[in-house]
Structures are given as C-alpha cells and as structure tokens.
Image (cartoon, rainbow, N blue to C red; front, top):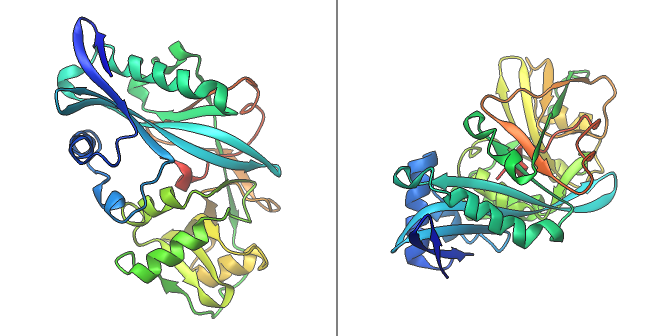
Length: 298
C-alpha cells in the first residue's frame, strides 16, 4: 500500500517474514538500531505468525518499524489475549517525521478492539510519546527469597543451543506455561527460542530426572531464576535446589511465582525502561504486585 506522510510517499506493509528482500532490509535496520537481527531465528523456523512487523519502506529500504507480538497469558486461571508492541525503530535519516505515529495508529486500529490489553516497554527518551495514544505507565514488582534448602546432588545438563536435539527439547517444553508462575505465557516457545539462540544462550539448564528446564544464571551467592518449564509435579523448592550452586543463598525471580511464602517483594527497577499499557480496564495493572516474565518481553 502506498501512503503519504508529510508530503513524502512510502510503502506500508505488514507481516513481512517470508519476503526475503524486505526481511533483509528489516534486519539491517534492527542491527543498526539494536545491535542484533532476526535472520538466524527465521532460518531455524522459529519466527512464526505471532510476531508481525509493521514496516514503512522508502523504495526497497525499510525505514521504520513497529512490531506486534501476540501473547497469551494465564492470569489467576483465566486466559488473556494481550498484544505486545516492540522493535520500534526508525532510520536516523527519517526520524521526527511522523513515521512511528503512523505505524502505532495502524497497530491500534488493527488490534485494540481484538485483545484484552496492549502493552510495551519504552525507553526513557520516548516516555512522553506513548501517552498520546492513550497508554498509561505502570510499575512492576519482583520477588526474591533466601534459599531455605541445601543443594541436591542431582544431574543437571546445560542445553547446547547449537544442537538441534536441545533446541527441539526447549521448543517442546517451553510451549507450555510455567506451572510455578502466577502470570505465565502459553505457546510462547517462538519467543523463548529467540532468547535461546541469542541473549540467554547459556542459561538453559535441564534436569533429566524431573524432565524440567530451568532458565537461570548466577551472580556471586545469588541465582536469577528467569523461568521454569516442567510438569509442575515437582515442588519448586526441589527444582531450585537441583540447579543452584553450593554458595547460593538467594533466589531472584524473573517471573511472579505462585508460592510467595518467605518472599520479599520490591519495585522492579529497570534502567531506561518503563512499562506502558492500554486496556478497557484501566485498573488491570494497578494494585497488582507482579511482573511480566522476563522471557515474555519481545
């Protein structure tokens, strides 16, 4: 579709994953904007219909993008359909010309009445931009607790994201929701696998005896537990005790656990990041001390 913005003509397209030329230009803009691209994710077959770029092209070059991620959340036992907005980027030569505004308006037009809520994570430099579209800011809260059990002598394997068998295992396990989470995503394996081949490549730990994957890393005596994929039949304490190190004294959760006894809750502080949401129920985020799982952030 040809459109005119500020007296300049652009081509507007969405859902460009299988168009090689446009995808290549999209990846180039992502590399320039964020320092990574999506090509390996695509080539491995993990980019599916749940991640939808909305792009503007000048000729054959993608000059602006806003992506939609379709997210299914379970909240207090009920399924919620959320839309996450992300990968907002504009070529440096095309900024401040209304391109992002046009794309955000198209996303709202397509999805606002077809979901329970829309949300995004914005940098501080654009915090004043999203309220213009009816988005409001919200705080998130993170839980942590002291370790209450000793490390278990159980075999734990680090998954190798270069191995197809390990990728397949991660894909199958992460397709289900985290059974230990109060606010969990379902069928988000496409996004988990993006983390698996990029930023979290070395953080996936498999416990064969429990048929459970734990996403975690360690900083001194602290274990950051980002997510857990398993049957839920094993108590979470045993899962944590299997993967933690002998020196681990504290666990910080990257999701909101159902079991909160002994947990300390604090305001989630993220540098240069603010959560914005838009929903018919403006109280959806107020008074609820939880967080969007780290691995659900597109």
